[in-house]
Amino acid sequence: MKKLIVSLLLLFGVSFTAQTQTTIEGADGVNVEIDNLSRIITVGGSISETVWALGGGPQVIATDESTTFPPEVFRMPRVPYVRNLTSEGILSLGPTLILASDDASPQAAVDQIRSAGTDLLLIKEEESMEGVIHKIKIIGEVLGKTDEAQELIRENQELYDKAAEYRKELTSEPSVLFVLSVNNGSTFMAAGTNTGAEKIIALAGGKNAMESFQGYKPVSNEAILAANPDYILVMESRLEEVTNAVKNTDGINLITASQKNQIVGMDGNKLLGFGPRFGSAILELISLLHPEESDL
Image (cartoon, rainbow, N blue to C red; front, side, top):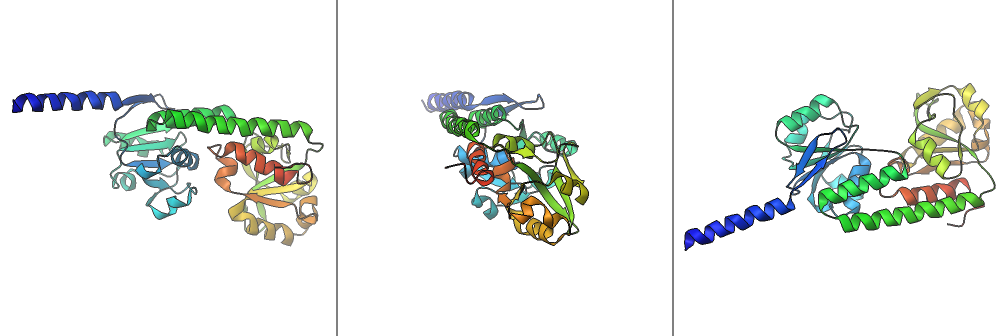
């Protein structure tokens, strides 16, 4: 009888495990079998945010240094920045699953983590509403929270559509210079075309002030003077630094954004993460760039 009971329990256990396993194809084409969510490490700000937004926070044991939201992340271990991963530090924490942005690197670290037998799923990052939906769906499937994922998608789609309606009513299209950082107090690293900053500025009814280059690059003071942006947009954590640099740099302090004190900041991951706060990020930016026209 004991043998029969043990056999039945084992059979039940095997069946239960099989039912809870999920195989998901990562952004790199690697199939990952998800069977243990007890110790998750998240790598990439929007990946971490999405896990928390879907209720997976209690299973997270560490995040990478690019994760700044929610506040709980600062009370747990941190692994290196998403593009500067080390396998040793991550594996020492004993994760059962790593959820990472598809720009996680170096590749050698990714390969070493997988070679050690730890599941690592790369999730595609795309700076669009479609990309946000895909990310939420995949993470919802991983966590077994598909209903919560659908609700989060619905909320974002609703806010995204609301922003589109606002844009139709706007009567101006301000030029916006996004400044990523300031080097040596007066060299501005700005967003060109094909950047997340350009895309969200457009979604908020603005126009990117720098269109002569792609990506994020240092720009000359002459180029900024010629662009004469109506607004300067920065990550909130760098607002004071950038404001001081603008106000204290001869010539730059004469552009419209400086003269009208139109240097504005937003939470960096919310602004550029294209994660679970995407819809509200667009509406917040509309309110900053169109303060007299928007009623948000």
